[in-house]
Length: 468
Ligand SMILES: Cc1ncc(COP(=O)(O)O)c(C=O)c1O
Image (tube, rainbow, N blue to C red; front, side):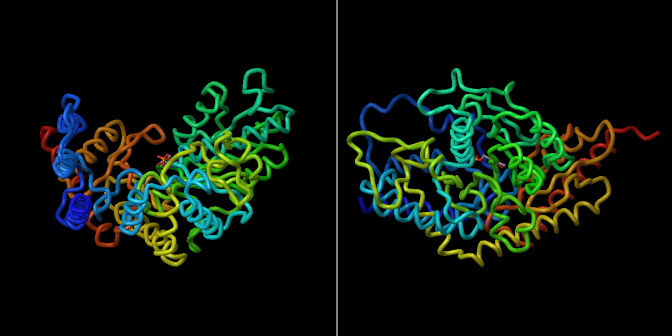
């Protein structure tokens, strides 16, 4: 065993310390990467070290460098070394934290990490916390608790009687909600045509007045607000939204996959004002806390509703009277002991370290937005309130094509990593500043690369247009 684990450690160290010179984009396409793994079902086994070496060789070309200081794609944390080290131990220990008597240490770490998260994010200290794979499942879990409670108040026991024949329940969410919320709702029995989308402004923040008008129609309702829109980083107006929900008796859930972390940062806290009035919240530790994947968490004010929606019982699993059984608060029974890495990261970074990191990333986003926004032909389409910057290039009918061309040119140069999206009917270049190692040097390099790519695209365009 020892040479094998040591070899894995050596490979990991070599990978992580090789970052400065590594191009951020994977050399292999998805298809190439597939070819490196594919083959017939292994019939005879293989030596352990040989298997590990084969794994590293197969994976290498298909790895994007998400942990280095050149990565601005999507909203992806950097798998912090302390989280990685804690995660190695988690794997080595092989604990199952579903139940206190099955994995006492894993459960204890989750309980303490949960309490720390409530404190750091300044959410109700008596709320329950469930650890899940990511924000998709955190949304699922919070919404399951909401569905249970809203229907219970309408005289229906969804855990006993399911959804068929249940009172009609309304689901309302902003039109710029993340796609995974629609997925979570689908898993809970709410199809797209049953969801009412509430208008949003140009930043993607929900129009609270539109929500108020819709809720005035009455009926049991679940409302989903958002902290941190995936493109713009915008925050919904929670105080007004919460007031409408309170009047209507609706359950308010907040998807804060990355934006919830603004509450851990004194200079961003104001963006979240009123968010604490919600009933449930979803977030990711594998985003702004930099935990290794898979690590999300859900917080529910009403722990009875949370437990009712999630608890699993079986005759061979004695119930616990000690504080809490994690399987009562997440969709799985057996799973990874996520609390170890979260506990270690919270301890290592501390309140100040988390606040500094979030604040630094937001300041870098403002720096990038300010510099690129001054360049001729580049438009910053969002108010840079958090870590996101949305860019469009050129004007008029050809702008989408030019923006796409700039993204492709940045990718071809492969000195920084960015990607695109469609936002408000336009092609855009998205920048996410959330990876722990990013600093002013990396932000400046990003700007240099985007400006150089824009120059190349413009030069190509001028060359293609014949002189008059
Ligand atoms: C706002 C928002 N909600 C939900 C999700 C889904 O999170 P995960 O991929 O961790 O499940 C994301 C992912 O980026 C997000 O940004």
